[in-house]
Image (cartoon, rainbow, N blue to C red; front, side, top):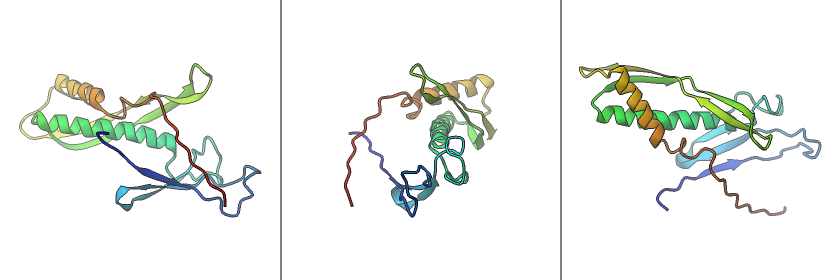
Length: 158
């Protein structure tokens, strides 16, 4: 195994009856280094108050992961090419549609990066296009979407 990544997802029922389907979808994502991120289902899927619109939902996280991965590769390639990037802001958008099995999925992610360069060496439009193309080709997440997902569950009883 070349690289491994770990995340803990924790949800607790609390006082909800659960079987009436009126339980909170709020949960926590824990990452290495101790960072905890409040997470929830998307309000478009489960209306508040059962979801938390202030929390990150899985669909937003997927869009952010794709955008972030692309950006990190873009910045690395720009630096290697001698271009100085001062600012990179991407207002990314993920769209859901139904797939061939009539199931909803994130079918399209549009990245809209606005980049500010400085320094003596200025990239041409072609340079920027090449950097984005290469970032897309190398992005781990872009190379992962629509991949097989393996589920290895465990369970216990209280």
